[in-house]
Image 1 (tube, rainbow over the protein chains, first blue to last red):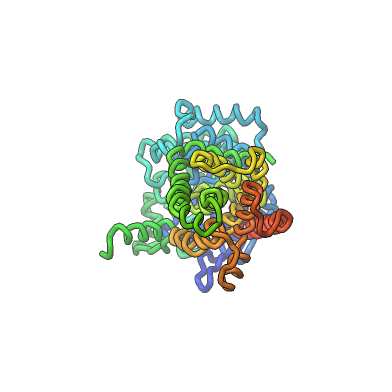
Image 2: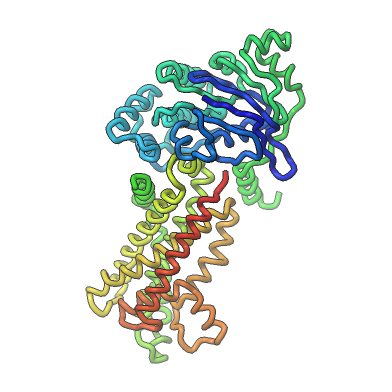
Length: 264
Length: 248
């Protein structure tokens, strides 16, 4: 379903992704793990047509997403690392807008929106503005939205960041269920090893832009001689801390802080 | 088409739902109208130029439409910041459709704002040459709205930080307004100012509005219309091109 060969991305002099290769089979849940700045998000951006690769090839459902953008986009859904909902519209309107953008026929759209909002326990709140939702509810809505156009592949970029254990647990239950009932291939990144251990069929560990190991959770543990995925992860990527380049949201926060701080 | 419609509808919904914003955004033009309209009125009359409120009201309509339409384009900054822009950029819809939906939505909102300020002007004592002039003037309101909504889209596609917003306000939008003849006649100005005001797209919008509403033309209907249409086409193309180049 996803085939990546020697994928590379270079920004000026910095190589964010160094010639990585992997394959994800149809219906598989594939987890991408790695410390901050390892290149996970850059990889997802290239897979989802947001960033043009410097080198290598990508195949999604047999097609090159860069040359067949519309067809490829129709086939995948994505839940971004940070929110991408319209806060000034209701949950239902957000779903509706997505359905229209993804050419879901009107009748199927209404049925599917109802079904998904029910699954993610948001049907009761369908007419409330998204800005009144908690972090967990927003995340659920985004994932529900990602499934709306019955994508063949769903990309989840750290979908559980900042959620409480209850929400995380529930979210993965839904994702697993939908993976089974709709045979959706799921490509996810996360920092929580227990999640990857629990939901992913196979795992790839990325560090400094390269894939350092891939296989099932058991294989990774065996390979590193550790008894937990966390142990395997640390054995593979070391224990030093990583710096991540500030994104525009961080810069804006700094800007706001500078104004409020009055020259501190 | 459905994509254009749903994005157009989104802009409209956002507008209708932010009632406070509607009042606030009418406040500034209303203040100009009342403070300057009545304040300069005696001087204007003494100079033998007639009623100042009559003269400036079309300019205030142009101002309202200008601000509202440029802002709608710059509102893309918020969509970028709060992430919604990404949702539209990965959708299987051409960037052109997304850009057109957003721009037409912004232009529609600006036209509604224009209609509201016309009512404010009428309440303040403005009287057009005939009642039919009001619907007729809408040709120019629409042109100004499209030109500047597309212009706003260009800017919104280029700037990525909030600091850029102040920059655009101070160095583009305010000069466009002050140098457009909205507040003073463009006749007998110093030569440099004549050049600048003639290069300001809004001058032709203001002239068109003033011509239709109170029968006072400087450039004439044809020139105003042709120039605005050409600018609308140019900005729409530029906006489409810049929008298609957005990377996140």
